[in-house]
Length: 264
Ligand code: 13P
Image 1: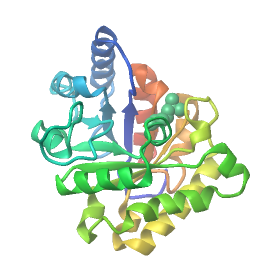
Image 2: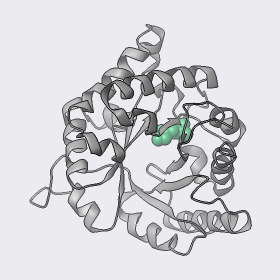
Image 3: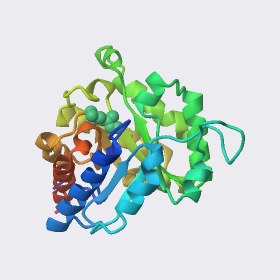
Image 4: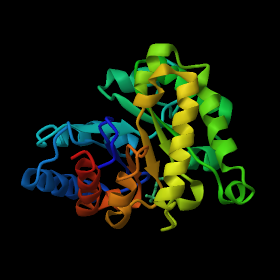
């Protein structure tokens, strides 16, 4: 029991995975798990972020799932609307296809694909203008943590977007704290460390918006069934952004269960 009134979110970030046959199997298995032991939307919101070309097909395949499974885009263009931008997908085009959620600021985009602060800001602006809901990712590197800069870095990342979000648009923001050193490494932040950072993020958000207490703050970084319950028990951890473990239906389902149960 976390004591929070925020309904948790468990979102699987499939990253550049899996092949089509495995994706179909994963969806089928997840639907089966949910049929056997349903998780209601009052207990936990569930979403998956597949590769862009699979967004619509995944959404359709989940259409007959026992509860709504959100299809989340992993990225969007820094260009808005439509136009001659080869290879890009704008916020408006996502919205037009029935996609409601998008990840922005994931450390892999920042580190590998050159999403600088200004690119991230443009993406946030575009997503908000198109009325998409954003899962905004923040997190420090190992070097930054070891230098005692973790809080400063993460709060700065929150401040980076503060001026772009209009008062009522904070309803469309979910924050995901993903310490970079915990992503794909098997190293999870301890529940105490994660909770401490989530509390700082909540404090920062509350200084920016009266909606600060209501914004879901997800934890990401080697979340697995073995550590989900203790993370879910933390007051300011309102869900998980799951990478590797979301590619296995049973593991992903168990993580969602752990968060759903934290509401009981
Ligand atoms: P892992 O769960 O594989 O560490 O990935 C976390 C992540 O980056 C989710 O966006």
